[in-house]
Image (cartoon, rainbow, N blue to C red; front, side, top):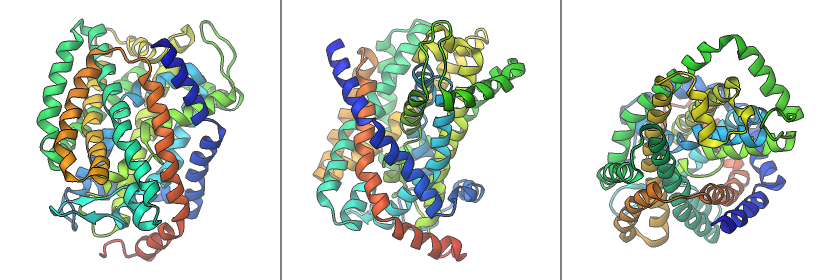
Length: 445
């Protein structure tokens, strides 16, 4: 297992080299300027996202699609992933993660727009869309669409399932001394009950779960920051300076240069908000919307909430606690930071992680299922759902040290064909935005 982990880490280092970082962040910047800083419409986007009324053809409301996508993105990446980035890349990784979110809003907007524009109605009347349909119908690149769908269907079991299940079962064991088998059985049952009902069942649960978990977790972060309010200015200064100059060795911290801060900040930013990954547009394509722009705006709020708010709060708590200087990593680092509030802190962290994990498992089950459906047709849906449920149990009880590296590799490989489609079809994105948004036709079909 150790040899496998080293091999996967080596592959991850290659995948997440300078070329992919430039392609990813460069796409964020390019689309931001091409769309005249679409981020300035975030207030309007949030207002539209909160509406639950049916606006057009689709399977779920725009709010349901948004919460399902947000459920999939807000997961261990927001808690364990942020701590991992700080441990490996220094406090500066928090700023690069945050910037990835700010500029990634344009990318999330763009990929959702294309997915709604090129979506199809299946034989049973449901909607199907995502980068695979954009690549096939928008670019006439069926072979690239197949590669993306295959990567998504397989990678979902890593990033969206076993990594998540393993994180919460280990945390519950450490905090409450409950066997991973018990945690796994409970999660497996709840997962089965929800996903067997399909996207409408998943969206209904996410509409209730996502607002609760976000408010609960962010509230805990604010409480921690209030307790150490006097050191917040110093924390901001440390994050900013470390982002551009690296950080020298302090205590058990190994020290990280600017390159590491950028690499881990951007990599964990993508793992967390999935802008450019091509996963969230799959559920965006199922939304009831008057036109592609309205759903694109709604989808862009997912990156705002996930990274600009939730990841930033976790990063501030971790750096502000000073625990990162003791050589702690991942879940241990986050647990130590939240442990500053006796009794309450660990509960906030565990409940937050539990809800984040469960919601991610639900959201990613739909992503993987639709990718599998694209490849093998509707006959694969039921078997895929049952395989998904089984994987939750496996992930809960097995030690998976190599899964994080595997998830990073899969993320990088999934992002490439999706980013290619965004760049190739940027004229379509601009034309649609001009037609509906810039010319004041946002309420027209």
